[in-house]
Length: 212
Image (cartoon, rainbow, N blue to C red; front, top):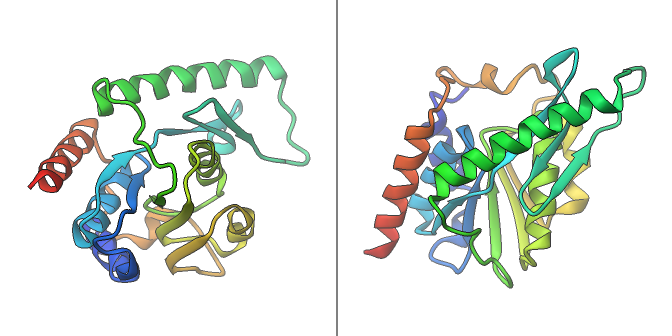
């Protein structure tokens, strides 16, 4: 169990030392992934930015992921047998999440474009992998940006979901891959919600550090 996301980020960075001082870039999934990603970028002396992804929750239960969308017009839908919902219901949820995604891009980047990652290694960081849908959407976005390599890194990953992203990436670093996975938060002593303000502050600190 990790103390918090900062602790997890430091431990995760220790497994990524081969990328230290390289031309790689860390892209973190907000909000929680940014705290982990900040520690990874700091320990490896790499630039940090965000890649905004939104989970698409089921109409009957917003916590039950049926898909995910990300930047570069990327949409990934899962396959859920026995679950019925109308196309209009799903479209309404997708539209709502697109609006929230645009808001977060505006707030976190303040007018900046997605970083140029062509011919670079991207280390995609989140605070955990549960269903794998948000990771798949993020990976698809990075592939559209023509990254040279995609490395997925998270402190904890559900073992049965690794097979969904392994064919889509070049390398993976997960500290914990439990057979019986309950939730990401159950592997952290402190899994407090991360605010927009904290994300903005960490991005600013990272930008100032890489300028020095």
